[in-house]
Structure formats: structure tokens, C-alpha cells
Amino acid sequence: MRYSAYRVVKEALSGHRGWRPLWRNPDPRPAYDYVVVGGGGHGLATAYYLATTFRQARIALLEKSWLGSGNIGRNTTIIRSNYLLPGNEPFYEFSMKLWENMEQLLNFNAMVSQRGILNLFHSDGQRDAYRRRGNAMLLAGADAELLDRDQVRRMAPFLNFDNARFPIKGGLLQRRGGTARHDGVAWGYARGADLAGVDLIQNCEVTGFRIEDGRVKGLETSRGYIRAGKVGVAVAGSSSRVMSQAGMRLPIESHVLQAFVSEGLKPTIPGVITFGAGHFYVSQSDKGGLVFGGDIDGYNSYAQRGNLPVIEDVAESGMALMPMIGRARLLRVWGGIMDMSMDGSPIIDRTPVEGLYLNAGWCYGGFKATPASGYCFAHLLATDTPHDTAKAYRLDRFERGYLIDEKGMGASPNLH
Ligand code: FAD
Image (cartoon, rainbow, N blue to C red; front, side):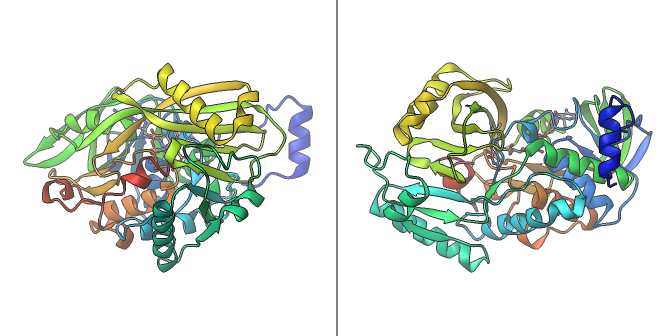
């Protein structure tokens, strides 16, 4: 759907009454072959790839609130593929390649901006760990450069290089990393899925699963019972709550993560900068606001708002890294619920209930995974086999001890 410049001007001069909604607003039908639960980035991308790449039909997506009301619209928009472990790096690099083609595929401007991401290091030991990580990235086909202190100084002269606790010694740079407009991503996948025939059903909360003889038959929802051939659950911060309705206990804890935006400033920060040692990261939006964050709130919660001690902590880390941030006024703060898995890596797998599939455990880092998570989950739902890059994301790894312990990337200290 392309709009001519003439159409844009005409609408502007006539009160914008001619635009149509980007997707339909259908009522649920009694039965579908596939039901995806959760209208965040992962659910929408799953529905989109199921209907397009995997050519499946009779698909519904159920969202308890409005599309994009969860973490997809609450994150700090960072995309990257700078992981270390073999279970993770090929998946995140696959995701990065999908990001690079996503706007063309969806014909939607999601403001994907490969402005680079720089992870700072402060000791020789940390430098060696980053060198190893960079090598793992290169081996998986990603890009990585190890910068010394002078190279970092040329990129970001405003940083406090000699702060007493964490003097900056250099950084690991991924130039293809960057940011994307988070809600634009949800809207792009939603429109694409709708055009491909998916029923996107909002204000429809899943309240229970009907399971007979070990197989899922359908879903109890706030809009009535819906029969389903296969059900894929992608509800991020609500994973443990929703899966408990199917009798499952997940190796997941829910915590709040907060995000912060300052007043608009002139262009200052070239890309994304992470200060893992101090639990702080920052980028600058196209409107000029500094977008930053830090660690999760320490207690378990399902509330989508955080607490003052973490705000103070993040502000303190920001001041340690770039004291000039103390001059900027804070404009907005909000929170989202993280589904923190016990090894920092996600789950894309079948469950012990036949026909019920799970996509969960994205911790701080699921935004960057959105395209690959959707693609791989759709692959699993459609073919009953895991995608090559997502084979390690098994649910039983927590029982068997085969953890993909990338807490350093899925969670802090390398951050989001
Ligand atoms: P969501 O958008 O949360 O989607 C889940 C949906 O399920 C919600 O819309 C919810 O309403 C719905 N739902 C829940 N229960 C039910 C039910 N019973 N029935 C029907 N629907 C239901 N990741 C990065 O990669 N980079 C970052 O920079 C980054 N920064 C972050 C900063 C913050 C402050 C936060 C909160 C997160 C950040 N993340 C980041 C993480 C990332 O946002 C999440 O991992 C990712 O968005 C989760 O997947 P999702 O988009 O599908 O989740």
C-alpha cells in the first residue's frame, strides 16, 4: 500500500478523514488451525511468517489488550547480534539479517538505523573477554571491531575516560547494530499479517486451555471459547502466569525493567553505548531525547512500573559515564515486565502438551530477536521441527543441565 505525495497533501488539507485503519478488527471465529497468543512483536511476527513464508491459513492472534501494548512498545529499541555462545550467536545474526531486509519486506518504515553499538571495557580481563566475543561473532558471519581507548575517544569524546572506578580502556563495536522504532515494528508486522489473512483479535484475554488426552483442543478467552489445532504462546512478561493455566511451571521469573528519556538535545551520541560494568546504556532518538536504562528492579513483579531506587541507581551510573547527562532534564520513565529465564537465554520449543508451543524467556533482549523469533516460532509451528538457528532453545535444557548461560548478554552487564 503506497501513498502518493498528492494523497498525503490532500489528507493534510481535508482533516485526515480518508485514512483507513492499518488492520481489520474482526470478531473471533469458533475455530482456527493456528492460534498465536500475545500481540507483541514476537506474536505478530510469528503470525506474519506463518501466513506468508510458511503459507498456512486459518490463523488468529489473540491479544488481551491492544497490539503493541506490552514490551514491544516499551523497550529501548536496541538491535545487535553481539553474542558469544554457539547456541545464541547464529540466531541473533539471523535476526540481524532479517532486520536488514524487514522494511522492504513489510513495505513499512520501522526506522531501522544501523548506527552502531559500542560495549565499553575497563580492564585487561574484560578486553580479552570482548576479543573472544568479537571472534565468535566474526565466525558466525557478524561484524565486530575491537577499539582501543583513543579510537573510543574519537567516537565519544564526552565520556568520562578517567573515572576512578571504571576507567575506559576501549570497546567492542558492532557497526551493524543500532536501533529501530519499536512500535513501528509491531505495526509493520500487524499490517503484513492482516493483509495475509490473519485475524488479529484485540481485547481478547486467554484465561484457560482446554486440554484432552494430553492434547490442546482450544482456548478459553474473555471473548468465548475458541477451538484451535495448534497454539503458540508468546506473551513475554506473562509467560509463567499464562502457562500455569496449562499446568506448567516455567524456569522463569518476572521482573520490571525501566526505561528513561530525557528532553530533546542536539545530536550528541553517535550510536548506542553500553557501560555494562556500571549497569547503564544510552542512545539518542531522532527527536533528540537521550534514551537510557540500566538494571532490572530487584524484586519479582507483574506491575508495569518500577521503583525509585533503580531510577537513582541508573542516574548515578549515567553520571559516572557521562557527567554532562546531569544537565539534561528527565522527561519520561516507564517499565515493562521481563521474563527472566534462569540462564539468560530464550525458549522456542514444544511443550509436554501436544499442539501447545512456547516462545518465552527473552529477558532484557527480546526486541532485537523479534524477526528471528517470529520466523523460528512459525517454522516450529508449521513444520514441527526447530529452525536450525533455534535448536538450542529447548525447554528441557533446564532439567538436563544444558544451559546456554549467556547472562552476560541476555541480561546485564552488556545490556539490552
Ligand atoms: P510483548 O510486547 O510484551 O508481548 C506480549 C503480549 O502478550 C502483550 O501485548 C500482552 O498484553 C499479551 N498477553 C499477556 N497475557 C495474555 C493473555 N492471557 N492473553 C492474551 N494476550 C496476553 N530488548 C532488546 O532487544 N533491546 C532493547 O533495547 C530492549 N530494551 C528494553 C527496555 C525495557 C524498558 C523493556 C521493558 C524491555 C526491553 N527489551 C529490549 C526486551 C524486549 O522488549 C522484550 O524481550 C520483547 O519485546 C518481548 O517480546 P514481545 O515483543 O512479544 O512482548
